[in-house]
Amino acid sequence: MQWRDGLFAHWPIAPELVSDRLPDRLSVRTYDGDAWLGIVPFEMAEIGVRGVPIGRSFPELNLRTYVEGPRGPGVYFFNLDADDRLSVALARRLFALPYYAAEMSMVRDGEMVTIASRRTHDGVPPARFRAEYRPTSEVYRAEPGSLAAFLVENYRFYAAGNRLYYGEIDHEPWPLQDGEIEIRSNTLFEAEGFEEPAGEPIVHYSRSLDVTADRLRVA
Image 1 (tube, rainbow, N blue to C red):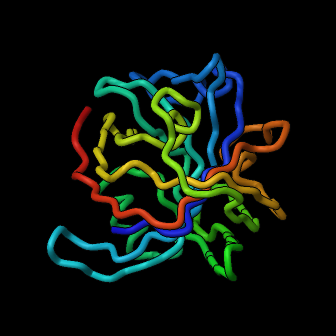
Image 2: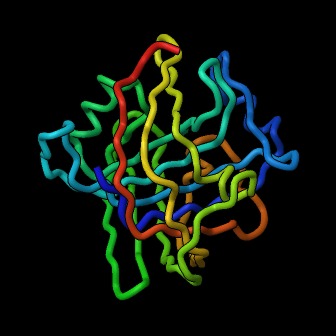
């Protein structure tokens, strides 16, 4: 698949506020003593099985944090909202991931990207997110050990169903740009039981990246 117009908006948060929300066998991963919550929208494009492109494309929006688990460091998703009901149903059934159906749009006008999302999934808290974001720097790669690398260079995710699962992803290092964002509406934190973090987020942008994801395995 290819991820396009990716935004990483991150807020520091006290580790204990995150640890209470994690499943067994996962612990909070911190940078300089802080846990981090990230809101990450992007377009998931040209999805397919290796060698057999299907061509599906749709916007996705997730709220995530960073953890240590039995298979090493990784990402833990509190939600993954997506504007594709078939993909949501398959991901929930096959990958034990918290995918939720949403009405979403992502529009690019020059360097400015506008994302709008309204969760429509039955039986879960409603959530909205609307923002405009754009890059503000030249392209660079995150330095190993930097905060940027901690936030974006993650190649494993965990999911908790009746058991703890993990999946591996593979891609080149992110071609990053610093970014700016204007958030018009955001109830993602509230929907997942968090108070909205104080202060402005740290913002990174990436225009596009080819990604391969492996199958889910028992951790």
